[in-house]
Structure formats: structure tokens, C-alpha cells
Image (cartoon, rainbow, N blue to C red):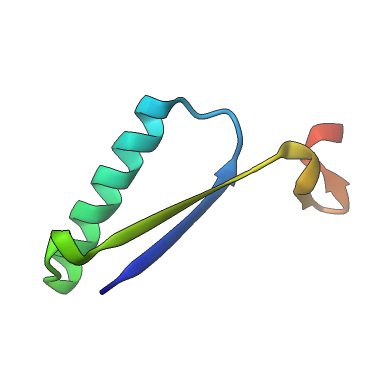
Length: 61
């Protein structure tokens, strides 16, 4: 049972998230010959004020 976690910044539409789950599932199934029914995709949407790069929060840039 593969479990894939994708972390990304907030702001994506439901349609984009749905497509991401579908495509990640397809990629994992094809790459490791896993049954798509057994692949779990976890989306972790992060607030821009909870993530930083180079010492600065994304929300402050």
C-alpha cells in the first residue's frame, strides 16, 4: 500500500487538487506496478505564513 504525501502552499483549486491526486496515483501505479486501488495520496496544504524560505516566511515576501 503506497502512501504518497504532497505538501504545497495554499491557493490551489479543488479541480487542481483532484487532478494532482489522479496524476500522482497514475505515476506511482506505472512506476512501481502498484494497484491504483491500493495507492493513497495525502495532500497537505500549508498556509503561507507557516512556511519559510531563506529565512523569510512566504507571506512576508
